[in-house]
Amino acid sequence: MHDSTKGKVVIISGGGRGLGRAMALGLVEAGAKVTITASREGAELEKTASDARKIGGGDCILALKADVTSAEDCERVMRETLAKFGVINGLVNNAGRGMSYVSKNFVKERPDFWSIEPETWRMMIDTNVNGIFLMTRAAVPHLLDSGWGRIVNISTSLRTMQRKGFLPYGVSKWACEGQTVIMAQELEDTGVTVNVQIPGGATDTAFIPGKVGDKSRTGADGHLLEPEVMVPPILYLMSDLSNGRTGDRYVSRLWDTSLPPEEAAGKARFPVFRDREF
Ligand SMILES: NC(=O)c1ccc[n+]([C@@H]2O[C@H](COP(=O)([O-])OP(=O)(O)OC[C@H]3O[C@@H](n4cnc5c(N)ncnc54)[C@H](OP(=O)(O)O)[C@@H]3O)[C@@H](O)[C@H]2O)c1
Image: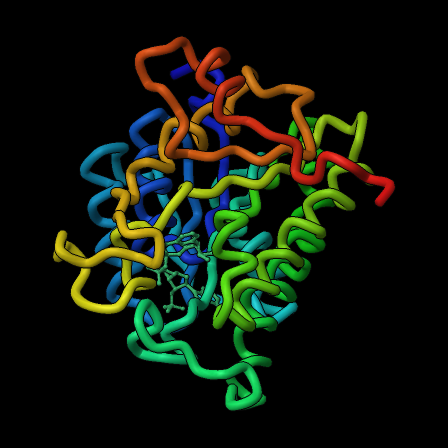
């Protein structure tokens, strides 16, 4: 991709499996140093860390059990990353909980929103919305210190955000994108950018009902992407090639790897909200 990704220190929440794992391994392969977190599955974190070390050597990754819904855990992730790598250059707010907590087979069966348990609603909003705020508030002072920073918020397709039966997941991603727009404006001209990245369709992870790797599964859109679709855009975003680009939305599925990265980025990039007035 670009030499400037080498040596960048990037924190990825929810890096034990799925999209987070793919981005972590892709960044390590490009020479970055990565901290990955997860709140429950320590064994997945260790497996991703061990796979990363085979690619990038013993010192390329730090795996931490930490919950994005805990302000204290988020501060600890920053402290331990600084202690290991000396700097923080990027944060990928990827940790998320999906519709399977509302309905095990949500592709086909979606309950009425008035039957959703308040605890399930709160858990999803806490992870997908408050988690972004808590991780980002802990990271920003360090990103500003380093004078070069990237915040990438992982969202979903506009169609999914508005899909009937997709509360509260859909609304949690509207909030993810809303946070992105406001944070991007507040950090303008600081060297720290804030963007959204999405896969561009259902992706083969534990988010989708059934077994990971079972290619007969589909999301509500009728197809299934590979988690590695996230890698080229995240490498671009964590490089100097994306300097100054902020408040945008990158659709990974539209990234054409046959093009030079800046050209591919131009075709996969859209403003988060086109109209800021109405
Ligand atoms: N897969 C898709 O089709 C798809 C499509 C569009 C967008 N996305 C978005 O992509 C992101 C990653 O999803 P995925 O498909 O890779 O899901 P996944 O395979 O279920 O991975 C989610 C990761 O987030 C971690 N996590 C969840 N809650 C956490 C918390 N409170 N604190 C720290 N870590 C937490 C999980 O670890 P623990 O369980 O151990 O905490 C896991 O490592 C999500 O934001 C999702 O909304 C996914």
